Length: 275
Image (tube, rainbow, N blue to C red; front, top):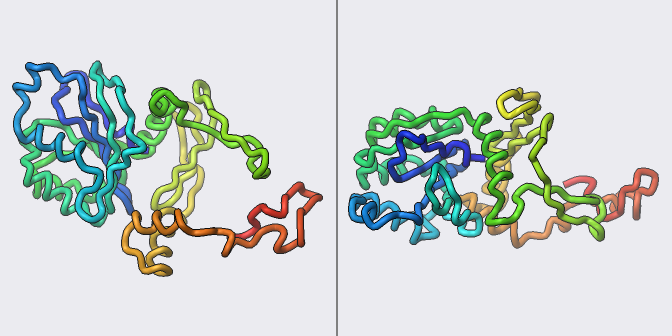
């Protein structure tokens, strides 16, 4: 959850507005595109800022591995008194040096903006941003951003529709229904963050939480296994192959073990016993 890392301050609202979550596997970038620019602002806007805006909003792919998830775009969102669209872009963390070089080539440091960043990479690449592109990162704690981002997404929704949801009757494929979940008063709650690894948080309020456990099996494990088993090289390739796959070819179902339903515990034969 990286939306919360995007925090333009009221006293410094110069565009562009960016937020980054630099994870162990993927970099997630959020860009706020203002749509309420006045004629005066348009006239005063420097050419490299226009170039950045055109480049980010007119493409859905950047190089071989960068992708803008058009289906996730949030339109006509009001933030800090401005109206615009939020764009979500991702690329492999291993491509970070090329991203920093692009920032240098486009003279990003001349725009006097703040680049907010969270995730472990905000610390790992901090010196590279400074020395290669003359950019200072405003580093924010990723678990703070996770909680604030979740509540932000719940508050704004997805273009008028609830973003948070749960499945009613999840074990019954015939009566399973997707239901909106309201987070007006969600505390206390368990929050599971699945990244390259997994962290599970006990959250008592917006600013009171602790990490109670986690696991080293996560998105990094998924990508690593996909690369080894299929020969793919990128997260995008792995997702494309997964979307065309059929998990029933490899899953062991309850009926494969019991020959049908496990009635004593209400487990249907179609339920997955082992992946």
